[in-house]
Length: 251
Image (cartoon, one colour):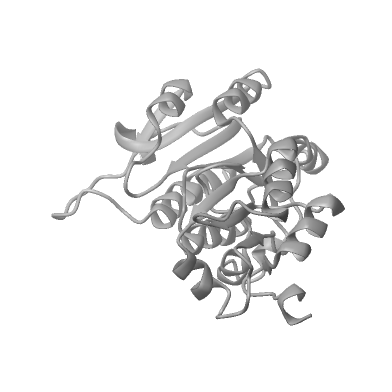
């Protein structure tokens, strides 16, 4: 039946049976979108499986779901799947060891713009970073737009998705990796010693690095704002600091 077909729209799987089978398959899922008011029939089974597998469920307006699904019959549910397979933090650290280099990691804290994440991945790859770490919640995943914006860099960059950024920071510190928050009111980026293992934490334009995450970091680094605006695009700020880290490593 037409309404049971899997429709691919920026890695969107639609229809109750399609989403149910996706959940059973064990494939990586970014999140499941459920239209407001949908509680009947197999929706309950879908929600139950999401709870069991700890998959994020987002309740959305039906009109938004209609638009996302390009007018196809979604039956009140859709699932976002990643465009690329995720790695683990251990995979990232193993790559650094394999190259004989101190770890160089970028951590994204609540970056919700796909273009920004894609641009960060592209610059990180160009700078020789070993991997990106993103949270499972309140952060864009590896969707089609991220893959496209990265201009192929995603194929060469390891991206790990973790449940708790604060805990991951503590684990990185135990491995002698210094954690730097890119945020306001920190020391100058060009006067900071980035030698050794580095994890650079980049936050969203609106909120910056979250308070708890910032408190976990060893150092806060800032870029001077000489104009009338008080913030830079997240990917631009990240790119400037990443290249300073790369510059120091080339010495």
